[in-house]
Image 1 (tube, protein in one colour):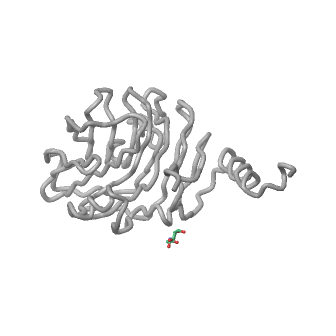
Image 2 (cartoon, helix red, strand yellow):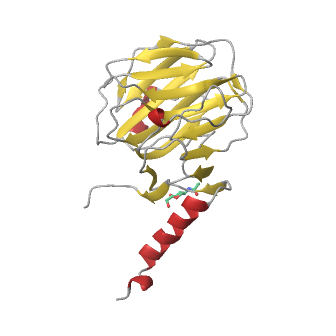
Image 3 (cartoon, protein in one colour):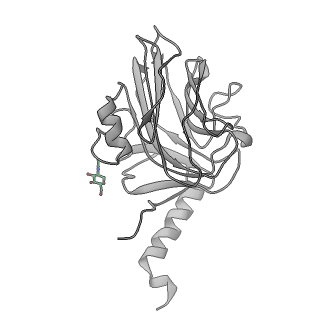
Amino acid sequence: MPLSTDPYSMTKMVLLLLLVTSCAAITQNLSGKMFTFPQQTSTTEVRFTTQRQDMRAVTVCLRSFTDLKREHSLFSLALPTGANGFLIIKSAQSDAFDIWVREQHVKIEAQDFKLNMWQSICATWDASSGLIQLWLNGKPSSKKYTSSGHSINGPMIIVLGQVNSQDSYGGGFDTKQSFVGMMEDVHMWDYTLSPCEIQGYMDEHYYPEGNVLNWNSVEFQSVGRVLIEEKLRACN
Ligand SMILES: *[C@@H]1O[C@H](CO)[C@@H](O)[C@H](O)[C@H]1NC(C)=O
């Protein structure tokens, strides 16, 4: 059979061409799909679009797969008032994360992050208590105080693959913090999910779809070599 009639490889080629070259924001249902970031660069990113501008609470959940031992970005939300609006960074320390909320930093330790395995990560924060909590593969962290009293507000720049830079609103990325690997099931809510809902996410069982970012209907644009591929799952 000639290669060109294989509909799967044709679709893949078209997708690849679209992704490497396209810049316009598109809305897509990414259910069953993942983003693959195959290269260490400062130019590759996925940027989400949302109209939301005021959040009194936040939950972000995502799954990542990487062999990076260095510090790297998992989720970066910048505000006009500062690049570290809501930031989840995997630290170079093998079991630690750095979380930023409205420019306030806390370190979360003893989280047992594994290389070359899917890691389910959720972070919650609310403005009234100022507490954040990070969940990794079903395991909650100790709650820690970051920033309270003010909501996360203003037009947000939400980026996967890079860390928003303090010097440049939505740009000026640093290769040494870039993400290399795969990412999927990115959701964001404007409230804190309950422990049971988070457990549902971690188990890939039932959980509410994000009401700020919903992986099953998400508007985004990608720049550079980011591919949309089928999720990797065991054969049955
Ligand atoms: C997205 O696709 C999945 C799987 O095909 C489907 O179950 C779901 O209803 C879709 N969601 C939306 C919002 O279109």
